[in-house]
Length: 326
Image 1: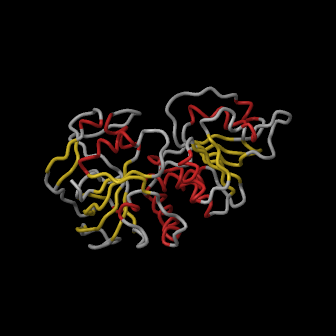
Image 2: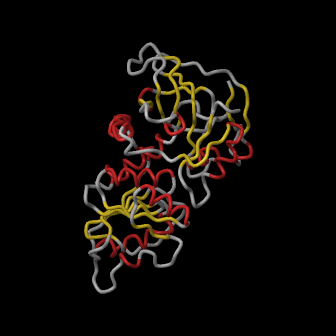
Image 3: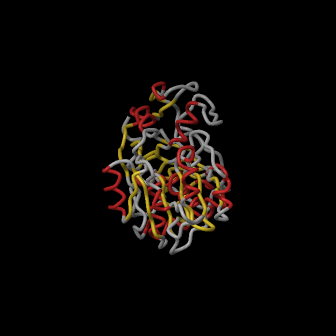
């Protein structure tokens, strides 16, 4: 089979498509013919050995993917040959024609979704669900700011929040981002590249704003957290999904609001939680209340370009790799 690989930590340009043996499975595993692989920032961290991520070499990138089950271990009862599935945390890398998966990280793919759309589910939608409902405890009627709403995770949060009956405000830095968010159903869009874009939600004459946010889903905490805290309603919560540095905050902004900041890391999610989240997502995907936005599809030989683009600002949806195109 063909797979994209790298032989040591390094830049995206070191990724090469090579021909390797199709991996074998044990009695507790599944072999999936990959139709499409997702591309997420974490893939680049693993490839480059940054942010405390490590890899074994040769390394095939990719946690997320979707495809068809072609072989099932004798101890596996949840899946059969021919099942359409999506997965995360696979065992051999999704940027390949085949991937070995564990049943705990493999889930049924709703028939309403293509493989490219399915490849967008694992990291983005699971992270979004956990941030919004498990960590921030979102409830219908609450007001949420998706601070950075046009990336893969941000759009997933937007869709989930709208489907759950929350009042959604989201931010972007471009006209295209604003158009995308409004097409998703967001009525109020902020420009986070503009100074004081949170000022309308930050009171100057009272310690807590009645127009503040119950929840802020934060994609770049090192840049925004200090100002986020001033825009929270009483009892509000900032859920931090993304961060690329340090930040100085005033704890009194938390104290005045009885507010909280929580971290969100998919690596901390237990198998039973992953299964619960997948079950919650399925009817929403099947009913088309959730629909991944595929911004761009790359061939397998273009994976290095995808790894570079996924880290650029101004994202407008998901990047995926068509593993059938070498």
